[in-house]
Image 1 (cartoon, rainbow, N blue to C red):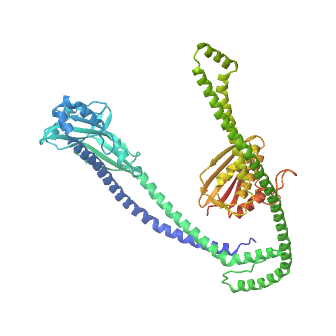
Image 2: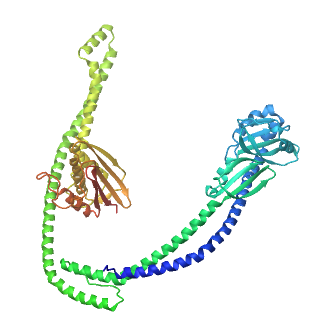
Length: 598
């Protein structure tokens, strides 16, 4: 016999009941909803058609108003009265004319209907159109027409140019039919609706997809066109089908949610207490410290069972606590000894290095100083000798003496010495400056013995450390440095330099052939972030959680102590920061150090 849980049985009963009710409800309501939606859909379609028609009319009226404002410009009146004199000004002015920010073809006609100037590439003889004559004879105040120009249709809006209350010409603009589609129609409105612009019995433009269904026609008598609006019945039927499907989906969703709630209720008040009891029993069997069974139990039988089991588990736990306490004490003492030993070894090592580096830097600094000073003095002396040579040559009176002087200069190559010696001296001074910079970086790196935090520029220490380990990296690593301006913070500068040195050396050692090291600093939130990324061998994801453990190393025996990253982790914790790592085997690693700004 197949056994099921209490929650599953309860959920099954609720599911069957809800399905029965849903079938009855759906059959009664679906017919009424379909009829109601058909009626409302027709109302909405009619409203959208009227709105679109008004939008078209408003679109053209706005352009006509702007055209009227342009026709009132004095330049047009002057151009019509004196066309030969003002035609250049008219061309320049009309070249920049726009309507609602868009450039259209505009044409200026004189009092006879002859074209004075047009921005259109295709010339049209407007003089033959009767509506032009009506405008010139003051029988119309404006005009909106549809024109066919070389197979393309345009809305042609026209307004007379008036001077002293008399019509002296006409200004007109041609707007492509497609402009209405681009400027006035929302693409979503055309779903299930086809708009066809008719001129007589000829279709001159279509908007929307091909549709078959009920059709409504609106006539524009003044423009001589009509609009046919066709509502796609297939689209409406699909919408109705989608609605019925959506309603069914909601009903199914409600059934599923109700069933799920019934299942959760059974699980919460029946299955969960039993599972908790079973899990705690397994925990006691494995020797784990048990927790008391608790919960909002609505059934008395479960409450009594939990109470009895808690008493029993407490007695079992008491027998193991003493042994666990002893074991934890021994483990803690052993860990502390390892930490103390690793810190002591590394501290003594770095202190010795710091003292030695500071002493060497101090001893080198003095001779480097007087070498640079002597080179500068030598440069001045040689400059005086060169000046003396040229001035002495100028003071010689006879050509014989000057010739003898040139021979001696050529014999001892004085001209070559004057050209070659100054660059040699400058190159030597540059080399001395480079040695001084190395000494400065060595002294910066050697600040290991500072017991107090100091206001420090982290980028300065990072640069000094990079210079110190440059010899280790230069043969197989290309270093990319991107150091942003950072706020100065209170830190132990020497200890941070020790962290940077460990990370840089590890990055270099992970690159066996050729690779890149990227060093970045930036501010993120309330922290300064130092990232050291390499393209080396990477770290296996199985071991990445152990890299900060003391004495853990992935190097061969005798090549690593396993203390570098452990000490670095402790130093960053002393600064209330954190150090994280992202690594992919075979592609490289990225260590990120976070130092709080405040």
